[in-house]
Length: 128
Image (cartoon, rainbow, N blue to C red; front, top):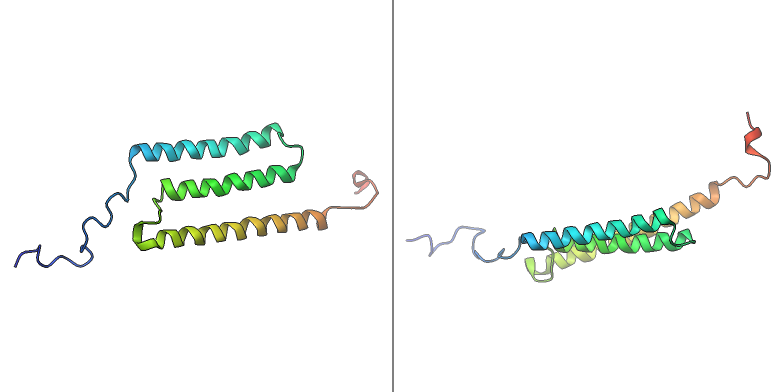
């Protein structure tokens, strides 16, 4: 019998991964978006565009989430059609972890800043 009649295990569908890898153009689009999504928050911080630091932090976190999605789409090639929807589940799981990490980090940093800042009225430069 021929090999065509009995395909090898794991190779049942030769076109299952067709289009899974990006083209040079899609990589360049992903790279360009990544550079823009990094440069804008950098510019916001360096110029002090927003007077309120909380506004700047929220904008930077929004850019970070968008950049994660860009990396997942353009570099990790995740979409709703590949691998029977498991890529979409991985995207949702990643977004949940990002939200937990960003909100938890912000909460911890806020409370550390609030609780650890010296509130004494004496001058700290006089300390030995």
